[in-house]
Image 1: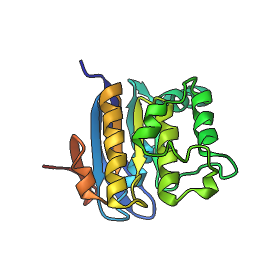
Image 2: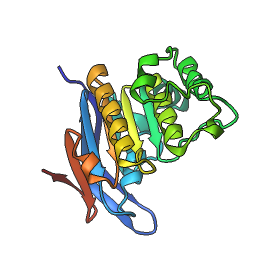
Image 3: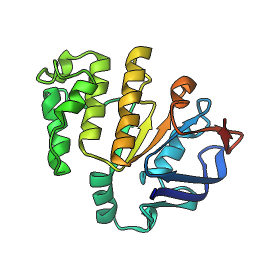
Image 4: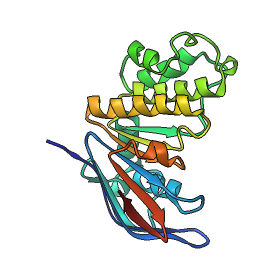
Length: 216
């Protein structure tokens, strides 16, 4: 039986101009949802609303049936540490460390162990002992994704995770993310410009005209 991971209602947000209003969003376990839209439409802002990092200007967000913006800092920090995984276009790795040391930090903080099979799936097992500065951009991004998945998160939020990757590597990464979601009964919220990759998800939305529209 599927579990509701995210339930957001009537979300609105604006900066210098309105981005969106009246948005409802639901993510269940074993489900992947992609959000596409032009630059400046508010895709990343919506992702941050949903992931506990930016309170919406109106509406509410529940993660694991808890109002995330009503919790104290310690409770939110615990949810982020053990249950959420964030994948960005910029990898934010520690460049003075090796790839394995970067991943091990995440496993230690979340009380997990390094999954060597995951390294093989991402095709980084051969470079795992090299310094981050010695790796290509594509290898660094795959190390970043391995670091996130090694935490065993229940929800993965991915903001343009394949933006700096070639098509072959982008498909490899998406395959690994979607397989993880299925095997661990997790959930994925993906923001991307790449509609071809977006269509690999269970549901596809476009953020346009301040609304979240369902795409076939």
